[in-house]
Length: 231
Image (cartoon, rainbow, N blue to C red; front, side):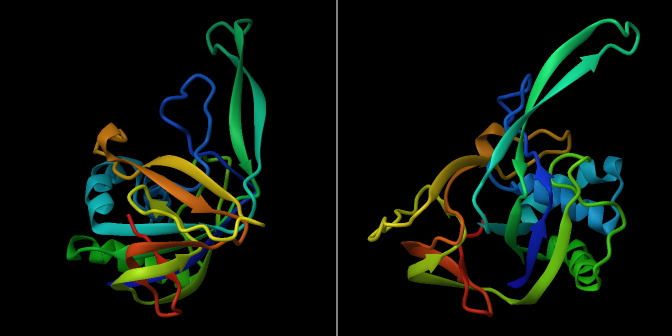
């Protein structure tokens, strides 16, 4: 499969957990649906059109994420006011990730998304974007840095990765002296109504801050010999 490797950084990120609408908490890493939204911004797909593209792109693209630094979250407080009744106000809390930094691999899973994949690759290679890419919210702009491109090959066996693993992989943790690991349940499919389907959430386990996780099973090897679990 064709693949592209990127680094994505920002000052802040907020990938809202669907079950926390009133005082939103954030997923620990950029989700697949958030990343596909970022792709749409880079290649210039308007929001109304992007709404119809989500199902196709969720099926046609695979991705994986490496968390490059320690996850630090902060809660910010806001005062929301009613537009028609300005004296009516209510407090609101929202959780943000501070200084997020990710290495992301994106792979083309089928030919239905070839055009969007090639456009995104071209824009990233040239360091351009039609709309400002964001990390979940519009006040969280993202810096997208092109690293490399090439083939990513499916293999099977024992492997080590800096990225996440799906729940059916059993981590082999031999040395826990300086090891950081986290867990999350992230959305992987959004329908044409901007709805993350509950049955399409995926449980992941991930190392952070440069840690490596070892396991056995199917994986994908990029041209630089880095190994990834794609979803």
